[in-house]
Length: 412
Image (tube, rainbow, N blue to C red; front, side, top):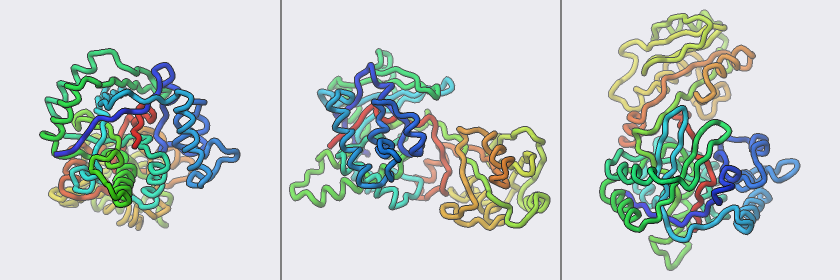
C-alpha cells in the first residue's frame, strides 16, 4: 500500500488567492506568462525569466536566483503564509458543470522508486534536470503533481463530509473554471485518511506531472545520499500531489498535425488509407470521432471519417490497441514515414481543449498539410498500461482542467 502524509502548506490569504494562483509553468511560454502575471502571481516564482527585460533565458542562473528571491519576498510580504499544523486539503475543480475532488497530500519518493506510484509516459532527462533545480534551490514543491487513485468508498465518504462545509477558497479563473479548497485540520480525519491510503490504496497513477514526479524522487534520493543522519521520514523524501478518484477524471483528445504529405497528393493519401481503413468523406464541417478505433482527418479542405478495419491491430496488446499507436503505425509511419514522434519535426500535437477548429485553421493556413483527430484515451486504458508496466506513445493523454498552482506549497 502507499505512504501518504499531511503537511503544513504555504498558501495565500483568502482575499488574494485569485491573484497568486497561476496556470502551471509548462502550459505557458515566457510571453504568455508575462501577459498573465499580476503583481502577486506565482508566475514570478515559477517563470522568473519574465522579471527581466528582455526576458532572461529560463534556465539561466539569473532566472533561478530570481525565483529564490521572489519566493522569499512573497513570504515576507504575507502573500504566502504557513498553516500552523500539518493538514490535508480537498481541492475541487469545476469545468462544464462537472466537478472533481482531489486530496492534496504528500506522497513518498520510495513509492515512486518501488513502482507503487505508476507512470505511463517516458520522461526526458533535460526536463527532469530543470525541475530538480527548481525543487533544490527552493527546497520546495511549488506546483503539485496530478495523481489518480482507485475509487475508495471510505475516502469518498470523508471528502463528501468535508465539502459540505464552507471552503477556504472559492473562485473562478478567467477560463471559466471554478476552484475551491477546504482545509482538513481535524486530527481524527487526518488519521483516518492516512490509514485508508496505507491499508487500502495499493497504487497511485501519475496522470499529469511525470517530470515533476521524477525530479522530486531524484531530489529525495540525492539528499538522502548526502545526509549522513538520513531519516526516511525526513521531509525531503516527500512531495506534493493532488490525488483524484479515477472515475472522476476526464481525458480529452490529443490530436496530430502533419507538416507535409511526403511528396504525395491528397488523392494518393486517401487511396493508401483505404488499405487499412474504411474512409468516408464527411464534408467541410468538423467531424469528431465518436468511438474508439475511429479517427477523423482534415485534408484538402474536407473532413474524413476513418474506421480501422478488423485484424489491423492486436486487441490483447495494451499499447498496440491504443488509437494513438494504430494511427502512428498505419498512417504516420506507413504513409508519411514519420517514425519517431519525439524527434521528427514533421509532426505536431494539439490538445483537444483547443477544438477541431484549430486543426483546420492550421491546415488551411498552409502551415500544415493534414490533421488527424482521435477519440480520447480512457482512464481504464491508462490504468491498464501502467499496471502492465508499459509506456504510452508520446502526447497520448490531455487532462482538463489543469491544476492551478499556488493554492498550496510544500517545503522541506
